[in-house]
Image (cartoon, rainbow, N blue to C red; front, side, top):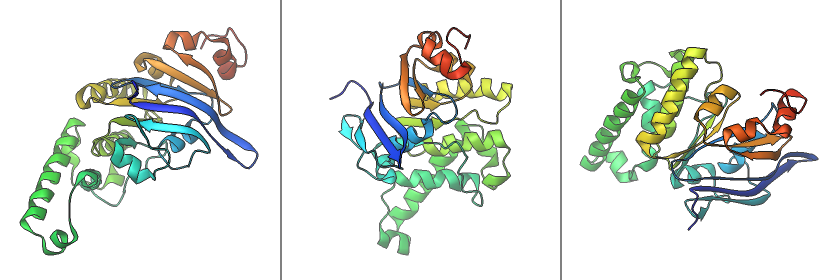
Length: 259
């Protein structure tokens, strides 16, 4: 059994002649908080898509809790215990806030066709339990009072929090956050940093984070991997990465510049 909850080994994919991601290796231990950073176009979201099965990796492997998952479809990987958010929010906008979370809770449900068609006592009890759990999840994110609102009507910051809440409702072992601070103001980012730490501690999971806000990454991440043009150029503790000449050059155009 691997000591790492998420173990990514030399994964890669090319689109025609474009090497979008190559030889990416990273490991996240249980309860780890790992950052994946790089300039625009570095291949970060492509890496997330490979890890979560949106793209099939052409090389390497992805293991979750000691089990290879790189050959599975996204919904199978989610059921195995890995969930994600997206750079562009992908809520079900016409559904209520509550129903967005209820749908995620159903991943762990045990409904049968007969039970659903005839609304058996077991079906009704399970639906009641799912509703109660979804409301508790919303309460964690201070969204319970908005349960009946349409998801698309929420302010941007609340939509981000709802997307994280929905991902957590699948009961993941590893949560992948793709630029959760995008579009947030400074005070919202401070609150987000506290929320991410609380999520890790309260739900006892590991987090892999893509984020452009370097202050947020350096503040909350324990280990960081840096991509540039689809290839890893550095990995280590935040201060070590911050002082790496290759990272400084990738972000600021010259080694020795202050990141």
